[in-house]
Length: 62
Image (cartoon, rainbow, N blue to C red; front, side):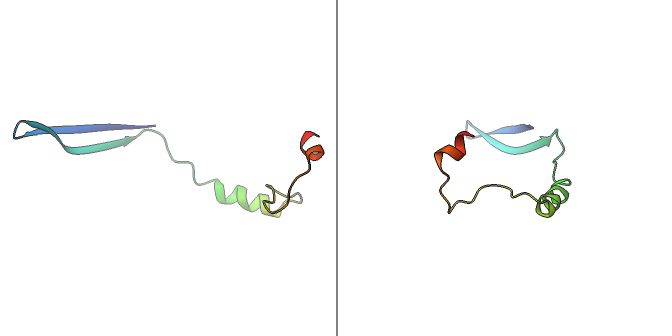
């Protein structure tokens, strides 16, 4: 979650935002994704579902 701090100024009596700073507290977790995607592709079972094939109801329940 980011913390956003704004600075305001008055222009002709109206409050106007003059600048905004965004502080990112958390690190972004992108480094492990290519390794996990590569291992998914190299594994033996199929990942995800095929969108062009309709799944029967008895397969969904078991």
